[in-house]
Image 1: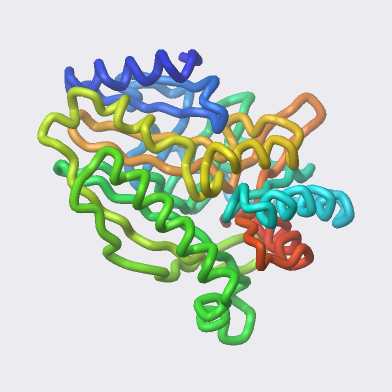
Image 2 (image 1 turned 90 degrees about the vertical axis):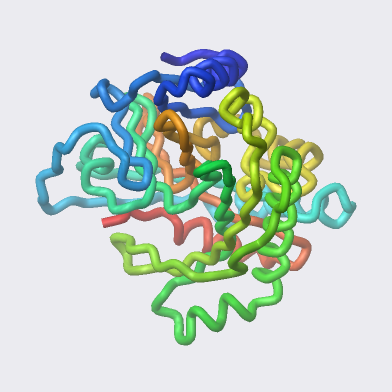
Length: 322
């Protein structure tokens, strides 16, 4: 099941030509992933890709506790400073900086998966659970769509929607991501356009709702896209919304600032039904380690970012979606 990402790319191409359904997941570094043919018939990795899921098991509703222990703001400030050095030197225009927060809960990862309310859910036993609100790309009837998500605000803030839509830093960050994704899709599609720019979705959490800002980008694939669907998909990686721009230089900055691999966090996962494909970015993510659970979160940093606000946003994203 777990193999190199290069093997997965080849398997995706073969399955696309044969019109065989598959489930896949790829880590951020494109070193490891998993690939499962006819995944609706297996019970090991549980998934829900925008309503397509294996299994109907429901979690028992019960009281629970969930506590987070974020890293010290001074430690975050040191990471933030390294990112700002890269931005001010012109090596990056936007860098996604993430943190790793120890959390304690009496829920298992499987229980979190079963109770989660999210557009995309994935549970890999012994590894992680993800309840992502963000689509990476969808391929449907020869069209490709992406919905990059950049911009988060507590919905309880007065005039929250107007505040985030009018924030200069947030607007600049979102513009940069949309341009990056549009350029990425232009590598494999024609007629690329932005259908919707900066619309708002509400996401429910255990600590109250938050608002997320997204856009919709569309392109047209060649008639032969099923012949090499894996190769085409890999041309878009890593996801621009969780790396930055330009990608190569920005990923170097991320490695220096974060000091450890992300693994499957901010990687991608998806389902192919034999004709169409839908995929998500692996954010809103809890991983299992020997010493316990860690919630991974982060946000985009621009030269106009303020350290305290970015730290608060990363911490605010540590939640359970129920």
